[in-house]
Image 1 (cartoon, helix red, strand yellow):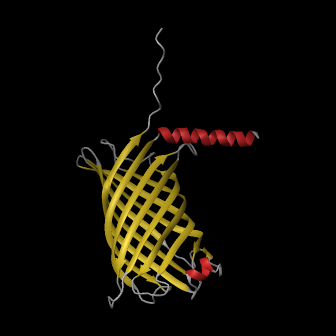
Image 2: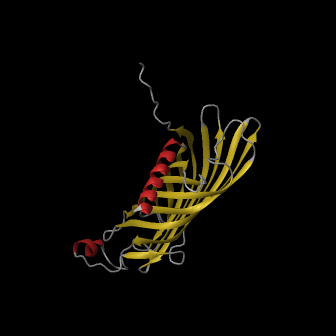
Image 3: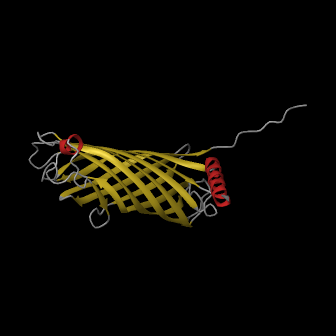
Length: 278
Protein backbone atom coordinates (compact mmCIF):
# COMPACT_ATOMS: atom_id res chain seq x y z
CA UNK A 1 0.00 0.00 0.00
CA UNK A 2 2.83 2.39 0.80
CA UNK A 3 4.46 1.64 -2.56
CA UNK A 4 1.13 2.20 -4.36
CA UNK A 5 0.55 5.45 -2.52
CA UNK A 6 4.04 6.70 -3.32
CA UNK A 7 3.59 5.76 -6.99
CA UNK A 8 0.29 7.65 -7.21
CA UNK A 9 1.83 10.63 -5.45
CA UNK A 10 4.78 10.62 -7.85
CA UNK A 11 2.42 10.49 -10.83
CA UNK A 12 0.43 13.40 -9.42
CA UNK A 13 3.56 15.46 -8.84
CA UNK A 14 4.76 14.70 -12.37
CA UNK A 15 1.42 15.82 -13.74
CA UNK A 16 1.52 19.07 -11.78
CA UNK A 17 5.09 19.77 -12.89
CA UNK A 18 4.17 19.03 -16.50
CA UNK A 19 1.15 21.33 -16.29
CA UNK A 20 3.36 24.25 -15.23
CA UNK A 21 6.19 23.48 -17.68
CA UNK A 22 6.61 25.25 -21.03
CA UNK A 23 5.00 23.39 -23.93
CA UNK A 24 5.99 23.80 -27.58
CA UNK A 25 3.09 23.37 -30.03
CA UNK A 26 3.76 22.98 -33.76
CA UNK A 27 1.24 22.92 -36.61
CA UNK A 28 2.48 21.88 -40.05
CA UNK A 29 0.80 21.64 -43.45
CA UNK A 30 2.42 19.94 -46.38
CA UNK A 31 2.19 18.21 -49.72
CA UNK A 32 4.19 15.41 -51.27
CA UNK A 33 4.05 12.17 -53.25
CA UNK A 34 3.22 8.60 -52.31
CA UNK A 35 3.86 5.19 -53.87
CA UNK A 36 1.28 2.62 -52.73
CA UNK A 37 0.91 -1.11 -53.13
CA UNK A 38 -1.77 -3.27 -51.56
CA UNK A 39 -2.11 -6.72 -53.13
CA UNK A 40 -5.51 -7.20 -51.45
CA UNK A 41 -6.87 -4.55 -53.85
CA UNK A 42 -4.49 -4.69 -56.83
CA UNK A 43 -1.15 -6.25 -57.84
CA UNK A 44 0.02 -2.90 -59.26
CA UNK A 45 1.71 0.04 -57.59
CA UNK A 46 -0.14 3.35 -57.56
CA UNK A 47 1.48 6.80 -57.41
CA UNK A 48 0.07 10.23 -56.74
CA UNK A 49 -0.06 13.39 -54.60
CA UNK A 50 -0.55 13.32 -50.84
CA UNK A 51 -1.60 16.01 -48.37
CA UNK A 52 -0.37 16.14 -44.75
CA UNK A 53 -1.27 17.85 -41.51
CA UNK A 54 0.94 17.32 -38.43
CA UNK A 55 0.28 18.61 -34.92
CA UNK A 56 3.14 18.14 -32.47
CA UNK A 57 3.62 19.13 -28.84
CA UNK A 58 6.66 18.75 -26.58
CA UNK A 59 7.11 19.46 -22.91
CA UNK A 60 9.54 18.49 -20.15
CA UNK A 61 8.43 16.22 -17.34
CA UNK A 62 9.56 15.69 -13.75
CA UNK A 63 10.76 12.14 -14.50
CA UNK A 64 14.42 11.25 -13.89
CA UNK A 65 15.36 14.67 -12.52
CA UNK A 66 13.56 16.45 -15.39
CA UNK A 67 15.65 14.73 -18.06
CA UNK A 68 12.63 13.09 -19.75
CA UNK A 69 10.75 15.04 -22.39
CA UNK A 70 7.25 14.03 -23.53
CA UNK A 71 6.24 14.36 -27.18
CA UNK A 72 2.83 13.74 -28.76
CA UNK A 73 2.27 13.78 -32.52
CA UNK A 74 -0.97 13.66 -34.51
CA UNK A 75 -0.57 13.08 -38.25
CA UNK A 76 -3.33 13.17 -40.87
CA UNK A 77 -2.81 12.38 -44.54
CA UNK A 78 -4.95 12.04 -47.65
CA UNK A 79 -3.82 10.69 -51.02
CA UNK A 80 -5.12 10.16 -54.54
CA UNK A 81 -2.96 7.78 -56.58
CA UNK A 82 -3.16 6.10 -59.99
CA UNK A 83 -1.37 3.15 -61.66
CA UNK A 84 0.64 3.44 -64.85
CA UNK A 85 -2.47 2.67 -66.94
CA UNK A 86 -4.40 5.51 -65.18
CA UNK A 87 -7.63 3.49 -65.40
CA UNK A 88 -8.25 3.42 -61.66
CA UNK A 89 -7.68 5.54 -58.58
CA UNK A 90 -6.66 4.85 -55.01
CA UNK A 91 -8.31 7.19 -52.50
CA UNK A 92 -6.67 6.81 -49.11
CA UNK A 93 -6.45 8.45 -45.74
CA UNK A 94 -4.78 7.75 -42.40
CA UNK A 95 -4.80 9.05 -38.85
CA UNK A 96 -1.70 8.34 -36.74
CA UNK A 97 -1.09 9.29 -33.13
CA UNK A 98 2.15 8.70 -31.24
CA UNK A 99 3.38 9.39 -27.72
CA UNK A 100 7.11 9.33 -26.99
CA UNK A 101 9.21 9.72 -23.84
CA UNK A 102 12.65 11.01 -24.80
CA UNK A 103 15.52 10.87 -22.31
CA UNK A 104 17.86 13.82 -22.75
CA UNK A 105 21.44 12.56 -23.04
CA UNK A 106 22.82 15.88 -24.27
CA UNK A 107 21.57 19.45 -24.38
CA UNK A 108 19.49 21.81 -22.27
CA UNK A 109 15.85 21.20 -21.27
CA UNK A 110 13.34 22.10 -23.98
CA UNK A 111 15.88 23.11 -26.60
CA UNK A 112 13.90 26.18 -27.67
CA UNK A 113 14.98 29.28 -29.55
CA UNK A 114 15.73 32.12 -27.11
CA UNK A 115 16.96 35.39 -28.57
CA UNK A 116 20.33 35.05 -26.84
CA UNK A 117 20.94 31.38 -27.69
CA UNK A 118 24.41 30.03 -28.31
CA UNK A 119 25.47 27.07 -30.44
CA UNK A 120 24.60 23.80 -28.76
CA UNK A 121 23.80 20.18 -29.55
CA UNK A 122 20.99 18.03 -28.19
CA UNK A 123 20.47 14.27 -28.25
CA UNK A 124 17.36 12.49 -26.98
CA UNK A 125 16.12 8.92 -27.28
CA UNK A 126 13.41 6.74 -25.81
CA UNK A 127 10.35 4.56 -26.37
CA UNK A 128 7.36 5.56 -28.46
CA UNK A 129 3.81 4.18 -28.60
CA UNK A 130 1.95 4.62 -31.88
CA UNK A 131 -1.58 3.81 -33.05
CA UNK A 132 -2.79 4.22 -36.62
CA UNK A 133 -6.05 3.75 -38.48
CA UNK A 134 -7.17 4.50 -42.00
CA UNK A 135 -8.27 2.99 -45.27
CA UNK A 136 -7.77 2.69 -49.00
CA UNK A 137 -10.48 2.64 -51.67
CA UNK A 138 -10.05 1.40 -55.25
CA UNK A 139 -12.54 3.04 -57.62
CA UNK A 140 -12.23 0.20 -60.14
CA UNK A 141 -12.90 -2.83 -57.94
CA UNK A 142 -16.43 -4.17 -57.81
CA UNK A 143 -15.62 -6.93 -55.33
CA UNK A 144 -13.64 -6.01 -52.20
CA UNK A 145 -13.12 -2.38 -53.27
CA UNK A 146 -11.74 -1.13 -49.93
CA UNK A 147 -9.11 -2.05 -47.37
CA UNK A 148 -9.14 -0.94 -43.73
CA UNK A 149 -5.98 -0.32 -41.70
CA UNK A 150 -5.60 -0.63 -37.95
CA UNK A 151 -2.25 -1.04 -36.19
CA UNK A 152 -0.43 -0.32 -32.94
CA UNK A 153 3.20 -0.80 -32.05
CA UNK A 154 6.09 0.05 -29.80
CA UNK A 155 8.90 1.97 -31.48
CA UNK A 156 12.37 3.33 -30.75
CA UNK A 157 12.65 7.09 -31.23
CA UNK A 158 15.86 9.15 -31.56
CA UNK A 159 16.03 12.93 -31.87
CA UNK A 160 19.16 15.01 -32.56
CA UNK A 161 19.30 18.79 -32.77
CA UNK A 162 21.69 21.69 -33.21
CA UNK A 163 20.85 25.27 -32.25
CA UNK A 164 22.91 28.20 -33.51
CA UNK A 165 22.73 31.87 -34.43
CA UNK A 166 22.66 33.13 -38.01
CA UNK A 167 23.56 36.78 -37.56
CA UNK A 168 20.81 37.92 -35.20
CA UNK A 169 18.42 35.04 -35.95
CA UNK A 170 18.20 31.90 -33.82
CA UNK A 171 17.97 28.70 -35.87
CA UNK A 172 17.54 25.09 -34.81
CA UNK A 173 18.13 22.02 -36.96
CA UNK A 174 16.42 18.84 -35.76
CA UNK A 175 16.18 15.31 -37.10
CA UNK A 176 13.96 12.63 -35.59
CA UNK A 177 13.89 8.95 -36.53
CA UNK A 178 11.15 6.55 -35.34
CA UNK A 179 11.49 2.81 -36.01
CA UNK A 180 8.69 0.36 -35.03
CA UNK A 181 9.96 -2.68 -33.14
CA UNK A 182 6.97 -4.83 -32.17
CA UNK A 183 3.22 -4.51 -32.44
CA UNK A 184 0.03 -5.85 -34.02
CA UNK A 185 -2.09 -5.03 -37.05
CA UNK A 186 -5.41 -6.03 -38.60
CA UNK A 187 -5.34 -7.78 -41.96
CA UNK A 188 -7.74 -10.00 -43.88
CA UNK A 189 -6.36 -13.27 -45.17
CA UNK A 190 -5.59 -13.77 -48.83
CA UNK A 191 -8.91 -14.11 -50.69
CA UNK A 192 -10.98 -13.37 -47.57
CA UNK A 193 -13.72 -10.76 -47.82
CA UNK A 194 -14.84 -8.35 -45.12
CA UNK A 195 -18.31 -9.90 -45.41
CA UNK A 196 -16.85 -13.22 -44.22
CA UNK A 197 -15.02 -11.55 -41.35
CA UNK A 198 -17.77 -9.36 -39.90
CA UNK A 199 -21.07 -10.78 -41.16
CA UNK A 200 -20.31 -14.51 -41.17
CA UNK A 201 -17.79 -14.16 -38.31
CA UNK A 202 -15.30 -16.37 -40.09
CA UNK A 203 -12.05 -15.00 -38.71
CA UNK A 204 -8.74 -16.36 -39.95
CA UNK A 205 -5.79 -14.96 -37.96
CA UNK A 206 -6.86 -11.41 -38.79
CA UNK A 207 -4.81 -9.90 -35.95
CA UNK A 208 -1.15 -10.36 -36.85
CA UNK A 209 1.99 -9.66 -34.86
CA UNK A 210 4.38 -7.24 -36.53
CA UNK A 211 8.15 -6.83 -36.20
CA UNK A 212 11.04 -5.56 -38.37
CA UNK A 213 11.14 -8.81 -40.33
CA UNK A 214 7.54 -8.77 -41.61
CA UNK A 215 6.81 -5.03 -41.30
CA UNK A 216 10.02 -2.99 -41.74
CA UNK A 217 9.00 0.66 -41.41
CA UNK A 218 10.37 4.02 -40.35
CA UNK A 219 9.47 7.68 -40.07
CA UNK A 220 12.10 10.40 -40.41
CA UNK A 221 11.42 14.11 -40.08
CA UNK A 222 14.08 16.74 -40.70
CA UNK A 223 13.06 20.25 -39.64
CA UNK A 224 14.46 23.77 -39.41
CA UNK A 225 13.05 26.24 -36.86
CA UNK A 226 13.65 29.93 -37.56
CA UNK A 227 12.89 32.42 -34.80
CA UNK A 228 11.17 35.44 -36.33
CA UNK A 229 10.14 38.60 -34.54
CA UNK A 230 6.74 37.44 -33.31
CA UNK A 231 6.72 33.71 -34.10
CA UNK A 232 8.87 30.70 -34.95
CA UNK A 233 8.58 29.29 -38.46
CA UNK A 234 9.24 25.62 -39.10
CA UNK A 235 10.26 24.08 -42.41
CA UNK A 236 10.21 20.29 -42.49
CA UNK A 237 10.87 17.36 -44.81
CA UNK A 238 9.08 14.12 -43.97
CA UNK A 239 9.92 10.59 -45.10
CA UNK A 240 7.36 8.00 -44.00
CA UNK A 241 7.84 4.36 -45.02
CA UNK A 242 5.22 1.76 -44.09
CA UNK A 243 5.59 -1.88 -45.18
CA UNK A 244 4.03 -5.19 -44.22
CA UNK A 245 3.85 -8.77 -45.45
CA UNK A 246 1.25 -10.69 -43.41
CA UNK A 247 -1.44 -13.25 -44.32
CA UNK A 248 0.17 -13.63 -47.78
CA UNK A 249 -0.64 -9.98 -48.54
CA UNK A 250 1.92 -7.30 -49.29
CA UNK A 251 1.48 -3.62 -48.61
CA UNK A 252 3.72 -0.60 -48.78
CA UNK A 253 3.30 3.16 -48.72
CA UNK A 254 6.37 5.30 -49.42
CA UNK A 255 5.62 8.94 -48.63
CA UNK A 256 7.77 12.05 -48.98
CA UNK A 257 6.48 15.54 -48.25
CA UNK A 258 7.63 19.09 -47.67
CA UNK A 259 5.82 20.89 -44.84
CA UNK A 260 5.69 24.42 -43.48
CA UNK A 261 4.13 25.76 -40.30
CA UNK A 262 4.70 27.57 -37.05
CA UNK A 263 5.73 26.81 -33.48
CA UNK A 264 4.45 28.55 -30.36
CA UNK A 265 5.59 28.13 -26.77
CA UNK A 266 2.94 28.09 -24.04
CA UNK A 267 3.50 28.14 -20.31
CA UNK A 268 0.60 27.38 -17.96
CA UNK A 269 1.10 29.28 -14.73
CA UNK A 270 -0.36 28.21 -11.38
CA UNK A 271 -3.42 30.19 -10.25
CA UNK A 272 -2.76 33.39 -8.36
CA UNK A 273 -3.54 33.41 -4.68
CA UNK A 274 -5.00 36.42 -2.98
CA UNK A 275 -5.07 37.12 0.71
CA UNK A 276 -8.19 38.50 2.30
CA UNK A 277 -7.81 42.13 3.27
CA UNK A 278 -8.53 42.70 6.91
